[in-house]
Length: 167
Image 1 (cartoon, one colour):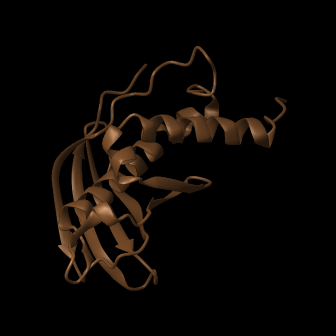
Image 2 (cartoon, rainbow, N blue to C red; image 1 turned 90 degrees about the vertical axis):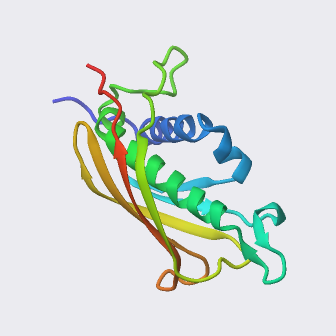
Image 3 (spheres, rainbow, N blue to C red; image 1 turned 180 degrees about the vertical axis):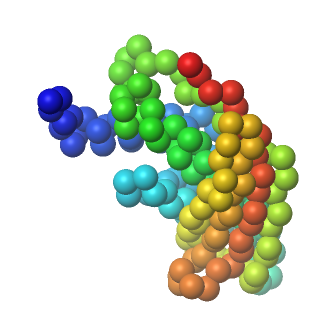
C-alpha cells in the first residue's frame, strides 16, 4: 500500500498551482485580488483601494471593478476545480522547478452581473459555484459581499469555453 504524501507537500503543491493561476493574469495584480484557499474552496478577496472608486460622491466601487472581480473569481475557481484532480494526484506539480506550464484559462462566452447595491469603500469577497463543467463548456454562478455574507452587493452568472485538456 502506498504511503500518503506529507500534508506539507500537498499544501505546497496546491499553493503553487493557485499562485500560478493568479500570477498569470496581470489585471488580477492591478486590482489587488487575492484568494483564500480552504481545501478545494476558494474565496476571492478584493482589498479596498481608492483607485477602485467609481463614484467619489457616494463613494462606491466602480461597476467595472465589481464585474471584473466577480469574473476573475469565476474563472480562477473554474480553473481550480478543473485542475483539482491533477493537482491532488501529483500529475501537475507547479512547485517543482521543471514544472510544465499551467493550461490556458477558460474563455468567457458571456457574463451577466446583477448589481444589487452599491459596493462600499471597503474590502469585498466573492465565492463561485461551478454549476456545470464539461469538456467544452462550463456554467458558473458567483456571489459578492462585503461585511455580511447574507447581504450580497452583486452576483453574476457566466458561461465559459473550456481549454483543451492535456493528455
